[in-house]
Length: 364
Image 1 (cartoon, rainbow, N blue to C red):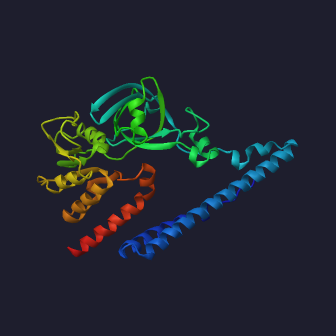
Image 2: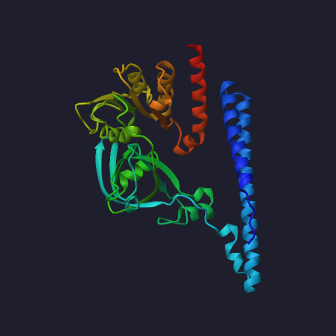
Image 3: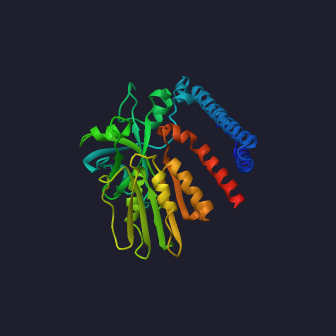
């Protein structure tokens, strides 16, 4: 079967795409998100769609030749079975977990324990590992178990699984046991009510884990800060603080009485920050801004509501001159947005933050 060599075309596209992305992005930021940035963004989208179209065309050509060859050889339309539309897309496979336990962590948080054999033998050494739990939309003509790639290929968008991202409080790759903490907001949201009502023995599916941060001995001191959404990652990180380092952890919660158990040690300090009904993240941002780090190298881990991240990023990168390689900092969620809305707008939010930080740095 004849096959076109697309190596040169692919390499050329990658080079042009990468150059256009970096140049356009930089120009847009320097202009304060003016038209240059939007033009570059539009060009990237156009190039992306052209690449997909080229791939579809090449795929159709290959299948067409394969179908013709099959028909000539066997005198039938056997090749029709292999039409592009019937081919499942390749992607991440969903992993099944069975709930083995459930416990209250605080008045506003519940912990789900589960066993996921698909995690046995995996190399998971970070302290911010997260999974994307899959929820089947109401009215969808399928239920778990299902092939995620097949569902995405055959179901309209409204019936495709909805994902909610949660950090693993713990994971054991020998047994496959995991623990996930869920913040409860009554009947609001998707995952919270599910975690409140789900029972031992039930199963669910997720994709992942992802993750990329863990404490290392290269730092003398660590500053960890976050709201309830980041609490599992911070708690997991406290368990891995090197004995030669010290750490302080800021946990923002609603009010006294909502505290939860966290790792302790002679080299660990824990400070509880209370919202008392104020805007999420505001009290935490104030606490971090007022903190004076000890002498030595400092590693930062700050996650939670995006509005808080915006303030602390400026404090660290502009106010204190912290290097980005020394900080893991990003928004897990944003006020008045679902996870889907936040993820679709996050890139633009980050670009605006970086533009504002650069402008503030130039004024110093």
